[in-house]
Length: 421
Length: 119
Image (cartoon, rainbow over all chains, first blue to last red; front, side):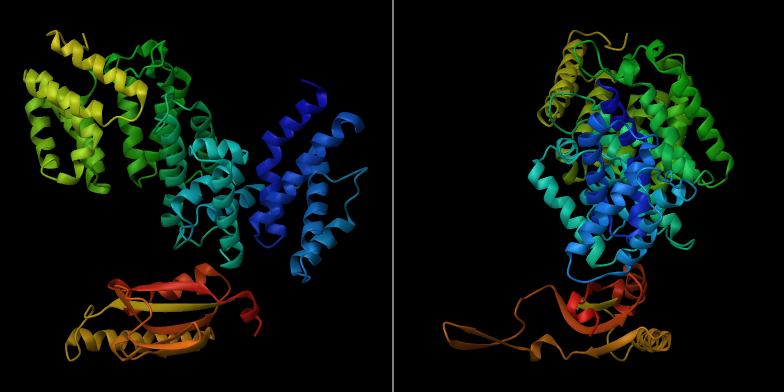
């Protein structure tokens, strides 16, 4: 790669969010306009740096060009706006030959404002996730489209609609006040968690893990934790993501098939991530404001510290799932709690809890219920019941790699052995 | 920034007239509308009679069609509107959440179109 191309790429990685967040503030929160202007500035860098040379301060050069492009775009609109006046004042001090470096002093606030605006509940959840990836994460529209397994045109329209709503309904470009903050922080965490989850188990397609999305979610999690270091749930989410990601090297076998937690080679877990995640969850818990992400992080930490599956502190994990069930009841939590109880107190205890879910007809098409039930039935010695439940789980699995792994487990039980030994 | 709050609830939802709950809700309306007026955010507000009294008009192929009832049969009936002038959507949502019927009905928050904003 040439020096110029490397410089553009580095600037993109380091400056995209900073430039966009600052410019959006200067144009009165019009994220769409800011995004277009910053994209224009990077396009100019790609065109000019290889021939004219990389400017001594790339970030400053990009700031100035982005501002000029924003002004051009505003001028094309018919009415003069306050944003134009503000920008023109800033431009008077700009000089491309010796530009000021980007002002990083208010950067933290700017990026937070950007994140909270992209995650505003007045936008559809899908739009929030897409907008966060594009605007805060700097992913290109085709990359965001791939993450959602949709076409570029569809994604482009979805993003345009969201940005237009931010502007016309005047979704404020600011961090919510103290009263609203906890609920809104949870919304942001939810979006980051969704980005990770989509990467962790791709909902369809043939690859089990989409590393780029996992990495992006962790980057956003780190950003939020750096900006809100006293928020226990923010630390909790980051800890949870790191501890989950630590297992990634062991989550798939050499053919890309998923390996269940109990079968994973724990020597392949990323110990540095485990240490960082564990330290974070302990710090979060000390703040004395428990929440669902901290509980999930604590569960992940217990798995991480166990030398092997049977030596896991199952009673403690079952108790934490009970806690999580009280905070955010859901079938997923109940299923995990049943699996932990089965390990702590025997398969029949877990199956009894699952029976409560089976009464709810809506969950008949819910794959994890059948997969977990199959496992517990097999362990309880009901091989016929287990085989039927495995068949149902396989039917309901969209991911090819996961389907194959389930079939493999079913076959190993049929041969009379315990697949985990 | 001007927004219209479109207030809706299902027919027969909410407390019945003559009950203490109804009186309590009326007192709440008085309170929130009073505060809205004092805050300077109020532009206009009117309540409507029931959908049973509505008549819809449209002209198709030069022919006027007059029919009974609201244009679209929806589950929730539109019963009132309030226009407010506040700094941004969060402020508008703040007022919307305080409408007493919002626990059993809904409030749609719509910005007035851009050429109405300066009117």
